[in-house]
Length: 136
Image 1 (cartoon, one colour):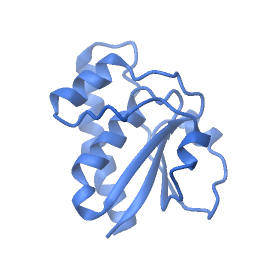
Image 2 (cartoon, rainbow, N blue to C red):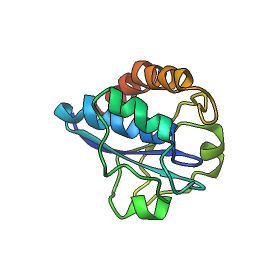
Image 3 (tube, rainbow, N blue to C red):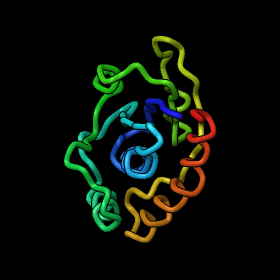
């Protein structure tokens, strides 16, 4: 099992950053690595998303909000995952036509830290097994 995953959302500040960190922390031993990007990147990582990742011990200073074009330079990708409906609608066609997966998660932006913990738990519970299944 191995592969490279691109995780997309709109702002690339919360959900996709959390998913990128979880994949890299939990699936790395299986040869799966992730990058993330935004359809309309905010240019920053939400401080509460960073806090939740730091608490889990999986924050990495390399995580930052970036454009799809920036992320493509680190490809090719075996799987493209959209974690919000807006990104799914705006998802471009990728070189090599990698497999795609859409799984929407609640946007915690603007909500208390508990919402970030809930999004983290939902991504860990639902998305990681789906990625393993697709790339296994």
